Each structure stands twice: as structure tokens, then as C-alpha cells.
Image (cartoon, rainbow, N blue to C red; front, side, top):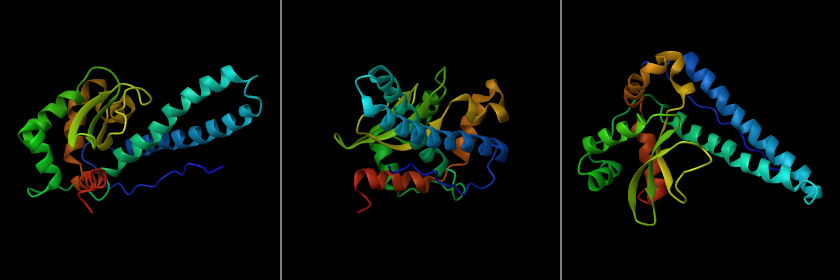
Length: 201
């Protein structure tokens, strides 16, 4: 059976977010990869007698989406830091799309940061919806519940406590959020948008 493979990321020194925190966060990501593979192996074994193991199969199948989305969410998140911070160009196709949807880049940024400060654990996500050719902001509490079907993530901000508490303490969510944006390589979001919208063809 084909296995999920752990990606490696070239993340430079970041403002505010320590190398130790990134190291521990990457271990969590590696755990998602490991657990997704273990679940698929276990599903294959249980499926040999699906009727007898129906209840366990149902429950472990539900768990798979949590582990799988944990892989993909974190791969997008960590990719944003690779190559060091790079600003969004004034002529950017993504910036133009953001301005068309929210009126200005600053208006979108303020709205997205407000979503990032939602109480509780979760993800703030900028999606591209190919059905309506538009960008959409969302807050997702759980990795396996609430992600927007068929919409492609462009920008993913991890607001689970493991992403910031070691450096910022529980009260430092806002400081972490500001440093997240200070560390962004917007080229990765440009590439995500180009791939999702077809503007890169």
C-alpha cells in the first residue's frame, strides 16, 4: 500500500517563533503522517472481516480525516516560512484578487487577523473557490470538520496552542499572529493561488 511521506522544510530563523518551537511543531506534523499510515494499515486489516469489525472500521475511518487534514494543513503552513519573508508585490495577481473581494489588501488583512483571534483552537484559512472564482476566509475549529469542500487553501494560519504557547504563552496569541505575518513568504501563497485558479498557466 502506498504510504504518505513526510516532507522536509527549509525554514530560516524566524521573528518571534523560535527554532525549538518549529522543531517541536514539525514533530507533531510527522506524527500526523505516521498515524495516517497506521490507520490505513489498520483499515486494511479490519476490512478482511468488515462485517465483524464494522464498528471499529467506522470509528477509525472517522479518525483518518483528522490525521490526513493534519498533514495537509501543516504542509501548507510550514511552506509559508520557506525562503524567508517576501512581501506581496503590488502587481500580484493574488493581491488584485484580494482587492476585488474585500476592497483593499488592508481591509482583507484586518478581517483575516480578526478571524485568527477567534476564541478556541483552530485554523484561519484563506481559500480559493473555483466554483465562483473568488477568495473566501474561514475559521475551522477541527481539522476533520468544517473545511470548505472543493475550495483550495491559499494561506493557512495555525492557531492551535502548540503553534505559539512555547514562545508567546497563552496570552500572546496576538503577538504570534503579528509575527506570523512578518515571517511570511508571499511567493508561496502566489504559487498556491496560481495553481488553484489556473492563473499560472
